Amino acid sequence: MEDKKPLLAVLAIQLVYAGYFLVTKLAFDVGMNTFVFVFYRQAAATLFLLPIAISLQRKTSPPLPLSLFIKIFMLSLIGITMSLDIVGVGLKYTSASLGAATSNTLPVITFFLALILGMEKLKIRTGPGLMKVCGVTLCVGGVVTIAFYRGPFLKLLLRHHLIHNHLQQIQPHLPPANTWIKGVFLMLLANLCWAFWLVLQGRLLKSYPSKLLLTTLQCFFSTIQSFIVAITVTRDPSDWQLGWNIKLLSVAYCGIVVTGFTFYLQTWVVEKKGPVYLSMTTPWIMVFTIILSAFVLGEIITLGSVIGAILLVGGLYFVLWGKAKEEEREKGECKQIGDVEKACGDSKGETTSTI
Image 1: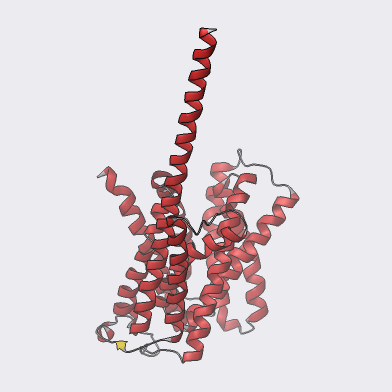
Image 2 (image 1 turned 120 degrees about the vertical axis):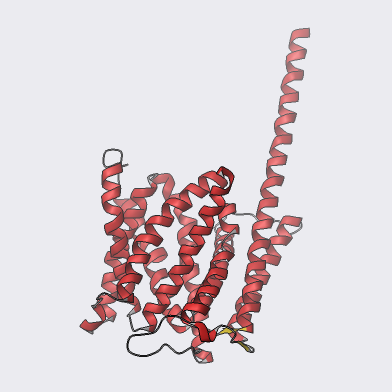
């Protein structure tokens, strides 16, 4: 049972993220403003994390100089506030299934950014390098397929959706082609912002090693930033009303469960099994989301979306596979170098003793 705990944990993580796409899309479908939603979500996350961070790390918190304060603020703006605001609009233009499918591009985009910034290497003439190139190519093909090809509708589950709007039944439909394409590229832009956050997060943790406090600070800054964006864009007071409905449920779920619950689980899984193990399970978000959205929301699934999603998953695995093989090769080379150095040391010792 102990060996199965990491597997159960990653399945729980991906199920939580599938629920995120579902309840968020549902809240947008019943009229919730996307920018107001992001503000409420970040505020809920901050209120959840702040007491925990203060109680656990009040005495051990590292110093926060002004330069680091500005870096955290800017990283929060690009990687969290902009990413969430853009993905909200993109999700409103498309579907929960599409949002989950495009999440598979995140590891590939992150690798591409790290490559540009010199944090990753790409040796095209090696097997792992070719795997990475094939992975990026498959991901591009998947995105193009999802954006520009719909194909026939897969309507097998459309009659079984469970949730209805209290004003009118939510009818399954697809947005116009130009709106759909715009939504796809907004999703990619949001993933680019998130990937930028992931790449620079590692550098920031070296200067500010407290993960809990860093997460809390970024949630707090994002709350202020998203409030400024929401109050600038949204002028209708009724857009800020929640009530005891799906809007309040989506805010609480995303702020507390997604941010709080999965934060701990992801940290635990990475510590036990490493980041590659967690990344390999990312496609399960898409599987869970497609099943839930088909039954609960009655979303239309097109053949183009299925083909594109398969290409995205294939691309993700090629990149991760190439990276894993590259790390194995580097470890083997380091071991060989260590053995040679040890052998040289032993021979020097023998020479000395002979003299």
